[in-house]
Image (cartoon, rainbow, N blue to C red; front, side, top):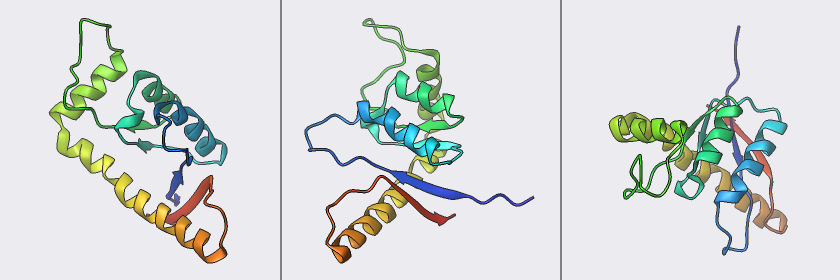
Length: 137
């Protein structure tokens, strides 16, 4: 049985003043609705939070979202979720493996953005794209 692997790049251009975090679930849903079965989701630190991690896990994928250097697994303000704490420990104790998964994002993002900008410039279309089905890996 052969299984094709594809990389999906989904993004939402904003006005530059909006925080990334609230866009995450919508982007995740659009990826799933497009028919992608996700195994890993890589996102930058702006998307870090228990709700986004849980949404990723509910879609059947592992969230690879790096942690800020000043974060700790527990704080006096509020208890962290078990998922958040487990991912934090994975990040802290197996950083090389975590970053290997996370840095796939850099290659995907570069390819996707380049492809979108080239298409927009060649066609002189407004910069807007919801989902790109990129090359198999």
